[in-house]
Image (cartoon, rainbow, N blue to C red; front, side, top):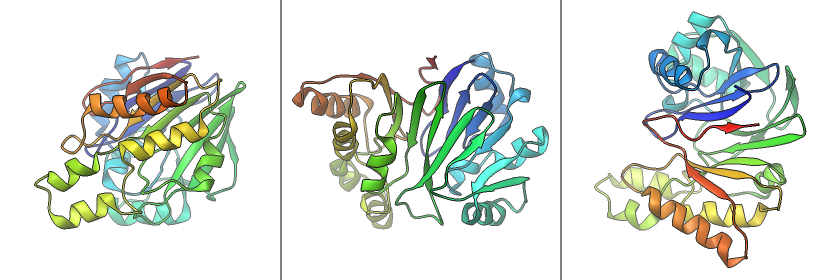
Amino acid sequence: MFGFCPLASGSKGNAIFVGTKSARVLIDAGISYSLLNQRLSAIGVDIQTIQAVLVTHEHVDHIGGLAVLSEKLKIPVLANAETAKGICRALKVRPRFKIFTTGEPFIFEDIEVVPFGIPHDTLDPVGFTFSFDQLKLGFCTDLGHVTSLIRKQLALCDYLYLEANHEPSMVLASHRPPVYKERVLSRQGHLSNEECAKLLVSIFHPGLKHVHLAHLSSECNAQERALQIVSGALEQIGQNVALSIAYQEKVSRCIYF
């Protein structure tokens, strides 16, 4: 597959497949090996052809399947040094790491990868941009607020995968404990629908082709609400773009290049 596809998105596990002319990689591996295999097969990708996993941060919903995957496939795990330490502590294993430095571009096969810092309550969390074949893809979830660096890095992307985690009113009205509510709503927590919309408006450009709204909370958000808020914000500036939801329980819309 020449393109990309979210395989799982949300608090129960995250994984994205990206395939280029010479690379087949995953961003995060937060679901089991068997589920990864099932969802990759659904899009016509043999799990044995995966060449590496790039990790955004060490929370279990992003690395839960990493130990088995890296052991079975004998593939490298690309992460920054702090995240690598966190992975070792969380999983009690040491995968074969390739360490990158946050903020410094690097090349994997035909992809120029830029890992950039984001505000989240982990050791050194990152978003990624992938550039290849005159395309730019931006992946950015698990952030408590939007920084100027994030806007700069996500500028001029052809495709975006952005967090629209929650509605603040639904968080406050939920039965979740106060510590959960404080964390999600904090500046190191997760991005709301409205904040996602503001980010998208600030970086919108005519070449933007599609946006996945990702990491939606199953209890504190609704797919229709997220789409309504983001599309409404774009309409206010006289623009529109194809939007879709990145699902938790099934393969999401695949983007083919």
